[in-house]
Image (cartoon, rainbow, N blue to C red; front, top):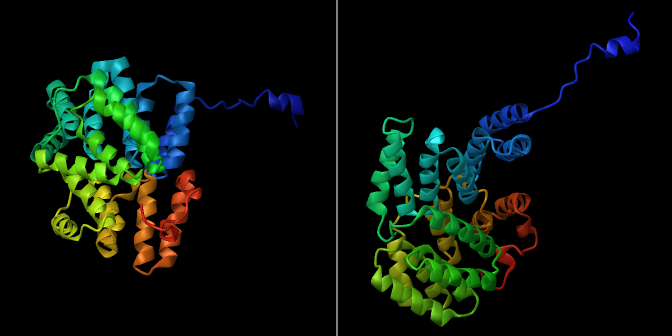
Length: 335
């Protein structure tokens, strides 16, 4: 028998590298174990921080769990560094913007993709995306410069953080800056009105949203906001009119579909809300605490407390912020 020290000389130590971590990340992604996949990709990027393929694949996982801003940040980095070598990034960014409801931005990137690679792997998807978005688009301005879009993304991510945590004053301060810097970016105004309302400025919030919808009568976000505002302020006639309209609208994009579901929950239409939640793709919305907050609330108020508790606890595992909040059905009022 060989002596121990001789045997040791025949052992080749295995030292994981970026490629090993990347492969494990892809395997986890294919099994739809998205959180595990992200952990492997983070390890891969810790070995090779600027590797474009690692960043692109990680962005796809972020898209799957609904972290569209993070996905686009990675894709933008790849385009900045590698440009024409990774043209597919333009389509992936377009797809993420569509999920966020940023229709003009989505159209612009889809068109950029087709301009650069009209026969590309995503050409059919890009054409279909443009067709759908052109039909829906009613108010987004199409003259955003790319550097402006990057700045908007940073603001959006921070505002999203505060709104999901119901930190109204912090959100209001940022949204006021956004409106001043990007006056033609409509989503900031709707989020501002919503935060104002729940910060206690109810009259101002309603006045601003009503004025906005007069100038932009096709804006779905305005009607969803007003349904919530009228419900909480007991404006029954106006409330009934808007709810009847909303019940006949089924948005295409996941972000607006989620907003519609949460709106119905907040105004007490739990059966309707539950139907809307069941139409959502959970994998794309795991990054939203509000998905778990309001989905669990629906189940509670339709009488399925066990399911409500299960969804709430699942949300707590995904988002520690929920562990610090009361279950919505135990509050004095729903927000």
